[in-house]
Image 1 (tube, rainbow, N blue to C red):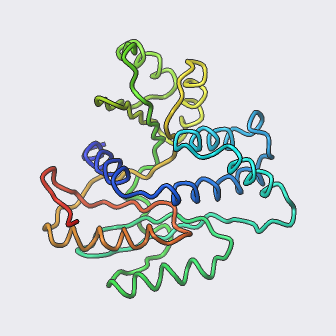
Image 2 (cartoon, rainbow, N blue to C red):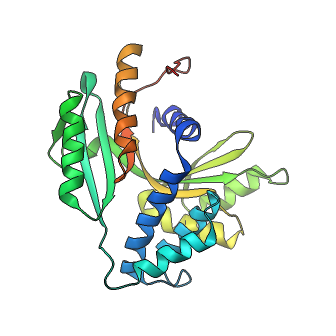
Length: 247
């Protein structure tokens, strides 16, 4: 997984700096709509919904907001949400993988196309760039003073842990896609609550481009992320440790 540590740290730091809480709420609520339709409104019997409830708690979403979303999604007359993905090339051949949740596919496709056209990007055929990314389970766990990290790591290996990053505030755990559910169960057994648990797309390798081009790509990513339907944007761009984004 060469290069993915740096990417993950940048991803989380950037998210902490500029992600708006309302956007986080919106993404979770849209995913709740899909989870309820697939597995029902009871978190105890719906693992995907249970995980979303945990993520909602991690970003301090009010309980009544979440419950209203569950109730609404359980209404047969509610608009159906669908998951969409887009694969694009932007400046210097940087690959973007875009995930979206939408109740109007035509609107979402038109919005992504418009952004690509405006900023010189190319919308590729689905499946043509997905091989550039590995889908991984990524769990962010608040670090507690009494944690025995060596013992914890050994326990989590049984849940499919591939790698654990440690900093002063958080542990970031990585699993293979197929071990995502196993890690969810292991953390539950250990009584460990995550701040977030999700599937992310980690680039197999990263591309180096000049600082001005990095800024241009980050601008496109930022504009995509502002779209109400877009939930995640992943890239294969290497961002140096000393890179400073314009305010």
